[in-house]
Amino acid sequence: MKTMKKLFLLVAISLATGVQMSCTDYQDEIDALDVRVTDLENLVKKINTDLKSLHTLLDAMADGDAITNVTDTEDGCIVTFKDAGAVVIHDGRNGTDGQDAVAPTISLAQDPDDGKYYWVLDGQPILDENGNKVCASGKDGEKGADGKAPRVRINPDTGEWELSLDDGASWIGTGTNAEAKDGKDGEKGADGSCVFESVQAFQDADGVKYVVFTMKDTGLVIKVPMYVPGS
View (cartoon, rainbow, N blue to C red):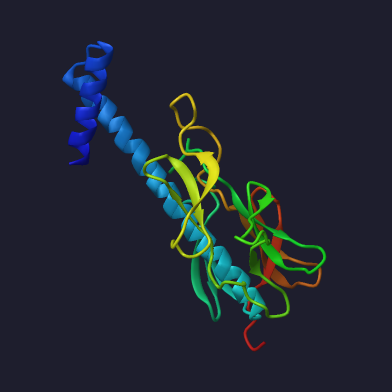
């Protein structure tokens, strides 16, 4: 049904503009559109997965949890916590989905005054309906204020990326359109990752092993210790 609607739309455009198109032209346009839609759908899924994983990571830190294993995947890794279980993280090392998609960058920033982590959208703090910064997770065992990670979607009518702070009950615009003004997908988030910059193993001078998570955009670094049996 979607393909037929696309075909009718292309026919209408060609008739209105006087452009002559063959059946092959129509199919090529439909195939190209299908690929772009699929890439954007995959990118939305990746971002939401990473946001949920990041929220789990922060809560695991607040609970004093530790990482037992990190397994590389094609475009990121699977991080397994002793208590919180496994989370999927995309860092775009080999990712191609959403390669040319314009997407907002959702990251974290740590307030130097209270030490808490707050959600950031394209470098600016995300504010709630009262104008307060939205807390992701705190320190000393304090978890995220709302217990939920932000979610994103692309508005099907406007093509704008939207953000939800209440698990999809309501949505607010981000000011970022999934399609560039010239009708082609832009380059922001070109590596398919819009949350994590990198995930790397690290060992300090005392032999303590960590996994280091670096946030995209803000460059915030979070270190989580590896689990030591018997500790």
